[in-house]
Length: 253
Image (cartoon, one colour):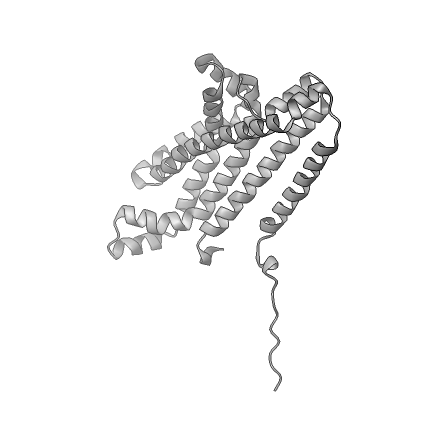
């Protein structure tokens, strides 16, 4: 009697395509950028913007701006989304979503410029503008994730003696994690891209390279800024995808 044939599936094929394909793109683009940077001849003006120390400082400033805004957005949007899914607060959901829509519908440059009239220029104003612009995806996904949890599971947990808080943290939130984290990924990518506009209100970011390249007509500086922003967005998206994969309960993957 012949033995049944066991098909072996490559570990790479078990992973979602974006988990292994995205880092390959990052490595290829990143290596190409560093080779280009190391082998290019820059003018004095280009060197002032593209020397290694300036690039590192600019990238760090961009990451700092993005991370501060992301932490504040998470601290606002996730708790607010939880509150708005409680039975006594559901009537306020359309108002909160409407305000979030207004913030995201406003042109980012216009929003930042308007905020400067009240708060002045600089890092704090840029962070506030980014917060307003990135709250909606996380808020919407938190609400959607919690609302898609089967009501019978909630009732069952309450039936075996779980309190409302224990049901929220041990039943509802774990099941809502994939949807919430998807919103977090979206918001982070939005923040990385929108942070480039902070240069218009005096906050240092990779947008400084882009605007300098345009206004002074330095194409290499412009290209460097655009490529670095794209790389940073890809890295953030990939890290978010890994966190999403790890945090999602096994039965839901």
